[in-house]
Image (cartoon, rainbow, N blue to C red; front, top):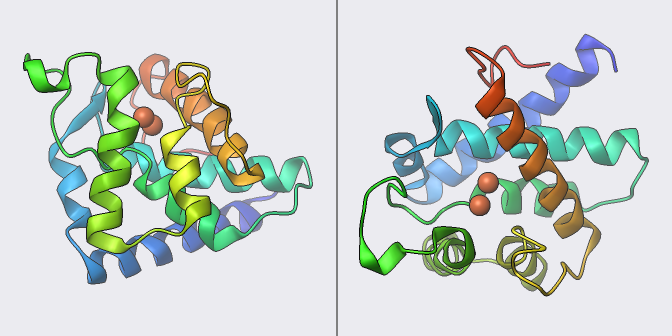
Length: 160
Ligand SMILES: [Fe+2]
Ligand SMILES: [Fe+2]
């Protein structure tokens, strides 16, 4: 994939970030740390970008807007999961439901986006995603988590 194509995909992600920021408190994700030094905000941008790359690479026909929005909102649970608190114990299992509820409240979701967010932890969620967008996000999320944990000084702006 050439640089121009990659930059175009990042632009699409930034465009949706701006739209969500105009609509609701999407920026809150900056304040929560996800993996290592990576914030939830940076992680979800990474997942959106990686999802676009997977769809392109495997030539999967997707609804790009739905794919990007669901990626950007898949971890919209809005707390620091590293903190010890009873209500978000079992974070891995519970956070898709928190994210879906918050995202629907703040931005409104369609059924395809809801399903992708609720199932993004598959196979932990047992039920698999219903749509292509959900499957791609599930895969992208795992790839991104791995890179963010193991690649030194990883950042969305510099990642290829
Ligand atoms: Fe997640
Ligand atoms: Fe995630």
